[in-house]
Image (cartoon, rainbow, N blue to C red; front, side, top):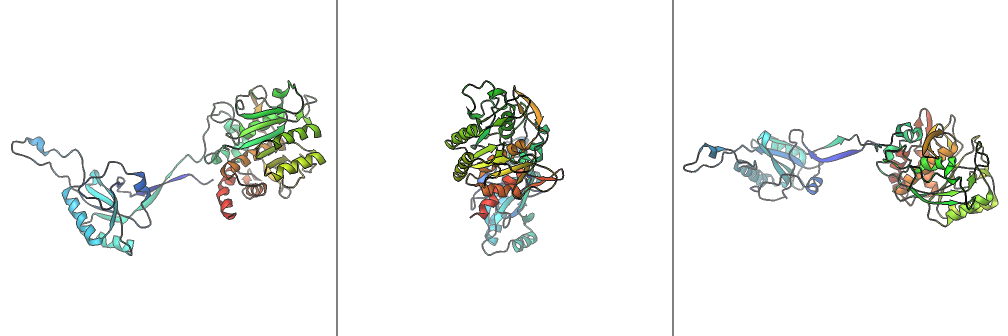
Length: 431
């Protein structure tokens, strides 16, 4: 993402204090207020305005009969002296400019103004004429400067942020200067989640268990906890890590469980169908499916229904890169693989998925790998995009993700900052 630059509306290297609040045409005998008005400064135009200075000598205070030497002390407020007022009045009558504002610079002994040439007059020609005028100390274009802010990315107090490979490599902190996913809801269809985890507690919109009515294992499930943390772990809580979209809201639908604690979780048509039907009754825009299996007519129908409603479904490509059927083969689904050597299949998005630090049950953190984690990174980025442009559809989102993917450690993968930066351009192109 481009460096964040705060443009100053006026500056002159030798006239750093030449800001003003006096309206055009105001009497030159009235000193301007001490600080420039933002609206006046914002109205200045560096393409046509001129900075002009005339001598403004310090005048001794008037004395009276019987006064002491203290009577010669300078006035406490250095404003426009009589000489400066007369000079500016004469010059304005001669050249016909409009004064935008002005202010005295005590250190240089001048009074400077920002002026706008009269209509039809060339600015450079007027500057050349004023420079030759013996009454003028300085005449120059109004320049525009920028501060080189170091705030080109969000800085977090969460201690493990620098260890989050996916977060760092996708430049998520830069994207967070623009958006953190505010107002976007992500439905995670997965295992259960540790709802009391410090980086997730109070941040989950809702949880549902479609596996059992009394599932004591819900909070100890690993996979869902890992996915939820990557998407939306709370930022700036001095705890652990930061999610890709820390202000998005996650709803969890447990459809998968661990039949064997030492193996991966599994799901079935029944539990997945209940979960997708439940999502259908919500307003969640993003559905994260870090899972896969064979094609299924019922699940296919439910998935198409969600897609027809404008939901954006993000799914994982199997580790071997061969689509299984559900949900990776459904038209309209954004399919994600773990960033790897070699080009991705047509239309497939690549994202970090190896050695990813994320939340674990019991309030812990650990590294994990897999296309499930890559999918969670992309769901988080999609939340950032939708918070900026809620009207984006799945095709537009996929196009942004693919077009803005960039090399990281020699491999092309999604770039959160570039994707967010591309949203205004995409919106203009769609008009």
